[in-house]
Image 1 (cartoon, rainbow, N blue to C red):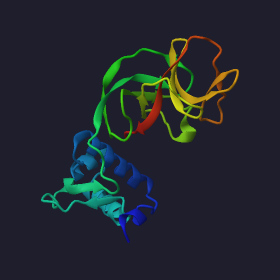
Image 2 (cartoon, rainbow, N blue to C red; image 1 turned 30 degrees about the horizontal axis):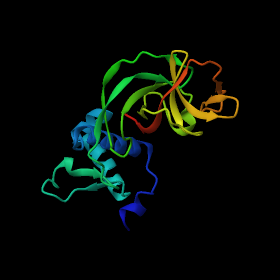
Image 3 (spheres, helix red, strand yellow; image 1 turned 90 degrees about the vertical axis):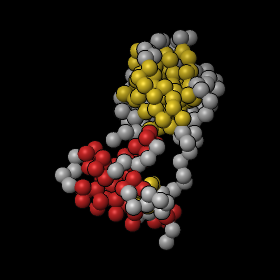
Image 4 (cartoon, rainbow, N blue to C red; image 1 turned 30 degrees about the vertical axis):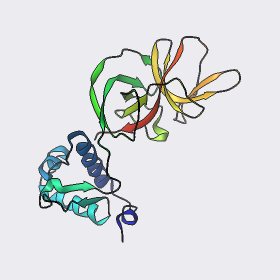
Length: 210
């Protein structure tokens, strides 16, 4: 049975978190974490717990061993699936509201390494605050990758500047109005009723840290 079919086997929550940590660590550092680094990150009492999770991930096809010259080392574990691209570094500009609009203060908070497939051109990242986009899997603490553009279409997830405040919402334009739609069934759309409105970019990807 190949990796593509095995990876469809559901993972437990702990396995999914561990796999995501390995992916994020590998992308940011250029190599996967050691068993000890995984143990420290999750606070496990014994490295054997990490080994058990890794063994299960390999059996389910979500993780595989590299058979190069370093195949006997812990760092030889790599996520299954398409080989990641070389990646690039983009600036993190503060936080953005996934709730009500938030005061726009563009402060650079460092850099985020992303895959080349997540965005192209002039891009930046924003850390999400709030829960207005949770129904499509954008949660507080996530980093959204934003492509600087004002060319968007209905249905795109955008970063908008509204009366000096920023927000991330789904864009919808009709004949007579513009709506910023939250992806949270408990919240109502925001109707743009002012000229002080600017689209700052389109969300093209997401990164999450555990």
